[in-house]
Length: 77
Ligand SMILES: [Zn+2]
Image (cartoon, rainbow, N blue to C red; front, top):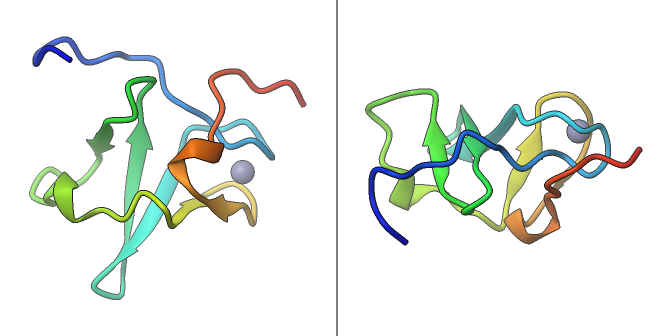
């Protein structure tokens, strides 16, 4: 995977179809997006993406939570 070639296409919640996700980091909610390459795109620039637990992702739009592997490219509905 080459650097500087980040996709603008984001994985979405399998339950409601939005790409606005968050994780809990040090008791704080950190909003993130995850692109098709499963790279974390930070909405808070000074957070280290390496400290994000990709097995415990929450959706901002609904009650979904789970692994990055459960996110989908296209929301079928
Ligand atoms: Zn959702």
